Image (cartoon, rainbow, N blue to C red; front, top):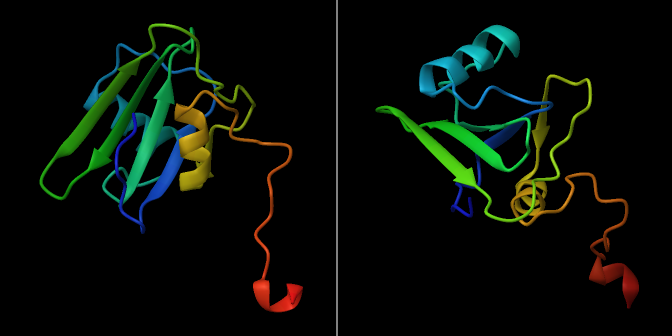
Length: 118
């Protein structure tokens, strides 16, 4: 799901596995009842099935929900299976996730303040 997201959007990932038979109403109920978040906020909510080869996302667009679905033909998503129910991730972590990487990269090259280098 390589979609362009607005800069001000928040991204939430539902850790663990979600029943992929759920659609907009079921997923938005998980967001509001289980996670105590507002499904109508400017946020992308991500869900993954037990086999980790499918991902669904819901996004409120102001006039209705957008439901996105991706099924991998080869490989699996490196989906967190931790005990956390939901977790906010950065746009960079989202890109890592859809590229097949874990959202918790152990080491990344840090940005340098060029005024301090010279």
